[in-house]
Length: 573
Image (cartoon, rainbow, N blue to C red; front, top):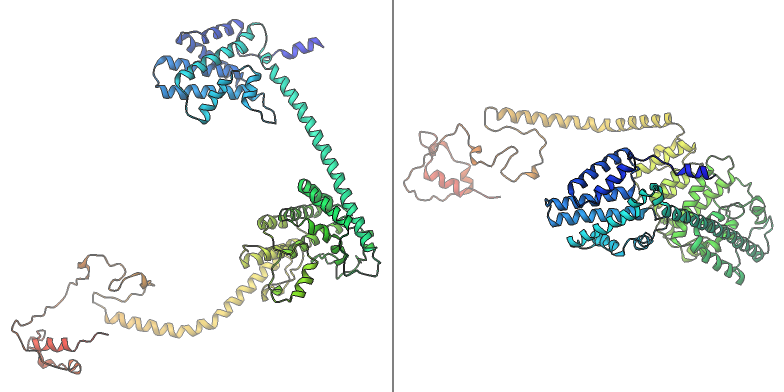
């Protein structure tokens, strides 16, 4: 056994022999920068051989010695040197104490104290990381102290024949101790969880017993319409369950979803007077809880109706429904879906409830788990619903889509429900449009329905198109006539679709800001006589009766009288 333990300590190293090791150690702690550079080159070669297995102490020593070499070269200013020293010291503190950390984090001061590292080195690392940078003198002192610690704790130990693993023996022992402690903590946590599970079952069984005792039992053919108020013992049990749910809410829901609680057995349904053979009541596509069974659990659920518990309850129900999708038993699947439907209906805010009387509202809210609307995480519930396909999924999906705070577009909802009905091979019972009268079972049916809707749209557009044909022809004839009249001039008819509201009055598309763009190549001049002429009174009716005799023989020359008549006859609209 001793031989095997000695062989276990043997390992491959990167240096040739102890002489090479001793030489590198001496060069590292020499005051000559050339020798230190030589040692750094040798360590770089060792790191290449080690790959990712380079000893941490060797790596930290090389970083700190490299700082001293650059400091003696006087090529860097004080600020750069502080950053260089600071990075090396931070790296040393983190790497050396990293092996001491377990799953439970401990402070660096405590870990450094266990390794005999001065506390002010840890404080110096803290200042470099989180506070104002320290002085260069303090960084140099810290580098010397850390190098001295590395020489005593790592480099000198190798001369005595010990391996690198000996330096880490203390930390390995502490790791083993920490691992044993973690195992003990896990055992304690498991025992606590086992005890909590036992307490949850006992509390729920006590609740069921008190409920049966309170109602005195139900006959098979007699359904109880009202349920007695909780007794004193029941109130105490409800208080204990509520207090238990604060710390173990998730565990309590898991116990509730076991057979015999929220998932009733055939014997429990029989004792409560619920006939499981009734096909109208137990419909898998629209699951619904028996009223008597719902009233049996209402006091407990009303006690636990906080938003956090209700949302966790829905998540667990959908997760359970996802696990049951591959099983042949439909009993658990039906009641799991029925509880989801009941919770969603309690949170619904439909319009038909707005016009009910106070008595009707009181009767409706009496059999509800909670009365006020809750803010749920709708996106998560929608994803959970789609991930648990079953016969009830279209019904549950419809409830989620109708109750969302920010609903999806109507077309998206319809397509989602159709795809869900195709996947689950069920028919959606509430079509939104007249086109959904035909049930969709396969992808071919969906394509056929799409082609039918396209044909209907084309036929509906045929008659309006005929009516507009005559008007379009008239409009095109008028535009052609205008284009003929303007042929050869500088103007032309615009047939493009232009948003004229984007252009100010007097400006056309494509017009530049230069005033000369409105000038034409061919134009005629008008000469007006400079002799003053008395203004002649005239009426607006005379303007339209101007005759050619009022003009001169040249034809294009106007007199003052003609201009006065034009001015007096001008009207502004």
